[in-house]
Image (cartoon, rainbow, N blue to C red; front, side):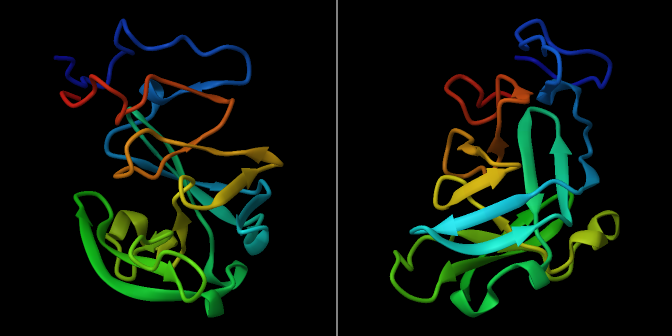
Length: 171
């Protein structure tokens, strides 16, 4: 089993090419980074979020997650659900479903209403599951991270392997 030491990529990590990042170069604990790229989220061809004021959270072994400010999200379409989870870095997550016309048993987004001090800048921001919505970053269609537990945003600029893929349960 590989154990993170913070010093170098494991031998099984894919070497990033030009203009690529390896998730194995991301830190632990995670890093919060402001990005000014165009991030769009659509459900059934309806745009429900658009922002150039997002944050990325970068964590070892996982594709980034993009958090959009509430002012850039069509909040009238979302409803808080009872589901909650706890992240050792960010705190308690609140989950969101579409109010109508979708499977209300599966959240499409999450947020942190009272995040830890290190992640206060994403308070109230929304991150969407790319497996449940159509997400784009600068026009590139985002692919979902393996395993429906994780919400990482996979784009061509990211190389892995990623947590959640078969054989990664020991990471």
